Length: 498
Image (cartoon, rainbow, N blue to C red; front, side):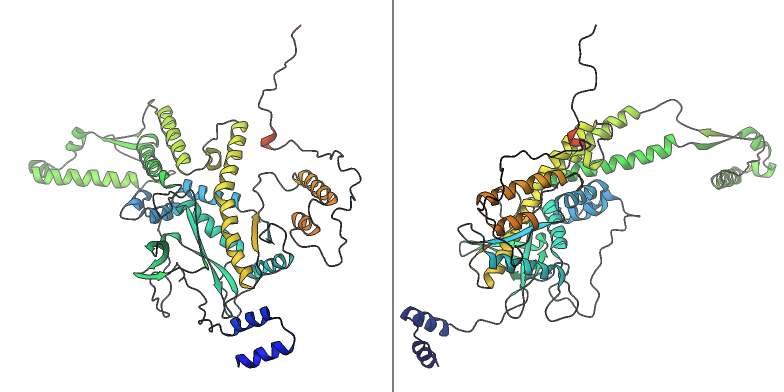
């Protein structure tokens, strides 16, 4: 068979180099049978999940569970996952991390290894991203594959809680990309084999090797002294437990000392005079009679509604009991402020984001918001761009295109979209000016402006100098209504006094 194929190539005038390449391709062994996924879904509790049983659903039963007890008998990753559900502060911090750090739009393009734009690769990867977002598996049935945004939300939560994220490129039967699947980081373990760090998935006592090019693992602020990532919010566990203990103590103090209660005072002499003489003569019967009387009065008072009237004899005196003029509000405020600051520092979240800076000025809140944007951008956006770029690069290369992929989320911004129109206009003018001077190609300009390649038949504008006055000033009016544009100085008069 090999000889007949080579004879056909030679008859068509193929060069010796082409004949040598054809011989090497024909003699290659058949590829092994492809697996759709090398990783098990990490919501399973066992590698041998029974198909006849429902998957386990976690329920913390927070209506009857003390949050302080969640820290007992668990690993750090399990504690953080449960506190992210149970703790209002950590839950708000994790939610803000994703809501602020994952923008609506992204740009994906392909480049050659020298940095120039690869248009076929760009068109292919944009089609693949739309397929991942909108289409299910090729064999039909329910689609369990998440979209890119849902994928980003899962990866972002892993990055925030555990300091790393992992993902697999799922291949179909033709060994071509079918989906992107996130993986729980705390199921990933490493071994040192063949002078390399090899990842394994440890699930239900089973070990599955992940030494595949379709598996990707990205860590945040990786320590060189350990193979595993460190959680950036592990330091908030102790302040969170202290804050919860303080809240529980405060609730009990409020219920005991601040909320008014009814106090019933029983005159022993008058009550004793009403006791039958034979009961007074027997100490045991007298004690039992007294306990029954107190229990009846207690049941009566505790069962009263606010609108009920209370009619009593003069042997019983009823009054409200409160804490008088004693107050600890300043001490509580100071202690609460200390706990909130420690909690915000451990959660890597600004106090204004958690609502702890209610008495701070607008300028302080806007500065904290800007610092938080920088934190989220470095800890989430850049990491998502990195893992998506690597995974999508593999997808392109599986189709035989020798190129790399750049995935870029838009940078997070707190300004409303209508207020950003002025900045968008200025950015568009700058890109068109670079296109006019020939500094970028038409495809690059179109990708920067619209996120897609130029439509068919679009005119070539690169280097045509269509911008007649490239140095003209572009007016970019601002509303100056945002918190970031507020003046730091007061509005007191600065002129000389007469």
